[in-house]
Amino acid sequence: MHVVIPLYPRFTALDAVGPYTVLAFAPGWTVTFAAAETGPVADDRGSLSLAATARLADLPHPDVVVVPGGPGTLDAISDPDLVGWIARAHEHTRWTASVCSGSFLLGAAGLLRGRRATTHWGWLDHLAGFGAEPVGERVVTDGKVVTSAGVSAGIDMALALLAEAADRETAQAVQLAIEYDPRPPFAAGSPKTAPAGLTGRALSLIG
Amino acid sequence: MHVVIPLYPRFTALDAVGPYTVLAFAPGWTVTFAAAETGPVADDRGSLSLAATARLADLPHPDVVVVPGGPGTLDAISDPDLVGWIARAHEHTRWTASVCSGSFLLGAAGLLRGRRATTHWGWLDHLAGFGAEPVGERVVTDGKVVTSAGVSAGIDMALALLAEAADRETAQAVQLAIEYDPRPPFAAGSPKTAPAGLTGRALSLIG
Image (cartoon, rainbow over all chains, first blue to last red; front, side, top):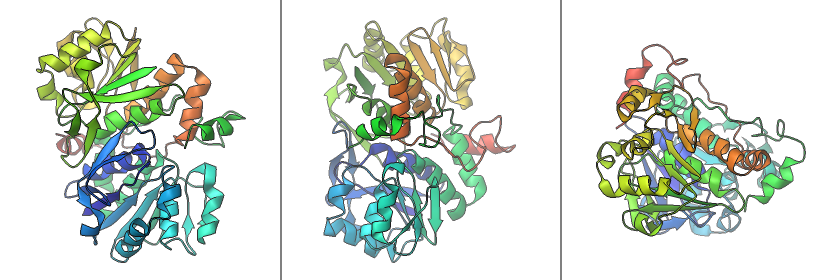
């Protein structure tokens, strides 16, 4: 199974590297980071660059696409090359997936019309602008389109996708290999459970 | 607060990018990826390179060091430049931390003698060879040395470190910003809860 993760300036690194680590550990799966041109692509903090090893134009038919989010989606949704690549690749994929605001790129490619979808809690309502039905869940699967919530949710999404695409035991073996037995020190990861008044402060950290 | 994450060939990407994402989202914190030389450093799958933007030799006094693990630690523990840098940096750090088998590099630098420490469940017993007391917990803090369990545990570790180094509210705001409200699809992330017989298969995926 060949997975392509498209990179664009100011993506959020964990959106890409969470699913990457899950899927690249699976036997027989390969993951390629691709962009408009090969070479380093800088993330949203400007302090980390991931190397794109292929041009998107050279990878028209991946089995799986995982689109990361990040503040760079604000510009990227107007990039006809990237959005067009997603739309055309989707015609052939087994799954087309996104993390966080990566769902806006799926939306810009026309893939969310009439579909249930999710994104980061901070801008869930914006999905309606792409014709989607916003759903406040961690991972939402509608046909072959799989969207997930903010940043860290890509790990959960990739494990669920792997269980479906390979089998339950493979996903469990990867989960054990990466010791994904999360123990967050606080119950602050969702606006439903976080201390009151924290949402504004959290949103100020993004972008 | 200045954090340095040292990279070496065949590190595991999520070990580095999990803590990076947590700490780089914190106001006033900067994170630098550094290596023997600047430029791309390939991970354990060979399909992802992270860019080192500084030479370790040029960053002798970081406030915080976070050492990722990965199969490359087997060679890296014999690299006198890397191990020596960790030992000397530790003299000045506020915290010296590791993820997964990154703890072996702390051990090789002599930082674990007489300390409680942890690592990936697959090789917890090996810590005793560095004079440490192996502890099967997600995050172990002993003085200013913070070690964590396998791969994904670096996210929990970084949030705990941030709560201690900054304050509880800052860590909670970052947790909410990255929507770290984990919902693993299976209870397979620890050998204590995974289906019987899965440990061998999980270990075969690593390395």
